[in-house]
Image (cartoon, rainbow, N blue to C red; front, side):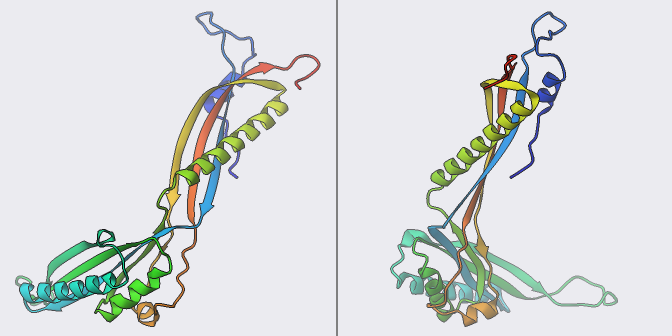
Length: 246
C-alpha cells in the first residue's frame, strides 16, 4: 500500500480556516484530496509463443528460400495440433547483409560476404498445456529461434474493475483516517480522477539450450497477470460539531 498523498489543493485548503474567503469575497471550499492504489492478480488464460528460424547463406535468394522453407514446415507442424489458422501468423521477416571483418588498417569499403534472414511465427493459444507442444513441434520442424512466451488475458475487464475497486476503497480509508486526525467531517465527494490502469503480462524467455531440453510434457510456469490501478478522490470537508464527528 502506498503512502498517503495529500494534493497541493488539499494542503492549501486546510491551511486556512474553514470559513475563509477568497480575495473576491467568495467563500473558499475546503477540500481533502487523497490518492488510492489497488492491485489485482489473476491467472492468464491465453499465451502467445514466438518461434522461428535464423539462417545465413551466400546470397539473399538462397537464405530467403531456406528460412521460408523452415517457416512453412513450422506452420504445418503447428497446424497438426489443431490450432486454428487465424491464431497462427508470421510476425517478423528480416533480411540483411553480412559484412566481412576487416582491420582498421585495411581501409576501404566494407565487403558483403553473405546474407542473414529470419522468419518468426506467432502462435496464440487459449490452452496453456499446448505451450510446450508448440515449442516441441517447432523444434522438430527446424526452429532455432524462440523469442519467448507472453501470457495474458482474453478479457481483462474484470481484473481492471477489481483493481479500481480496491483503489477506491483504499482512498476512502485514507480520507477517513485523515478526517479523524484533522477533526473534520467528509461531507461529499466532489471529484474522482482515474490515474490509470496498468496491465503487467508475464513473459518467459528461453535460450536455445532450454528449447532443446523442452518436451511437449514439460511444464511451463505461466505466473499471474498483474493489474494495478490508481485514482484520486477529492472530498468537501466541514468542521466537526462541538460534540465531535460521528
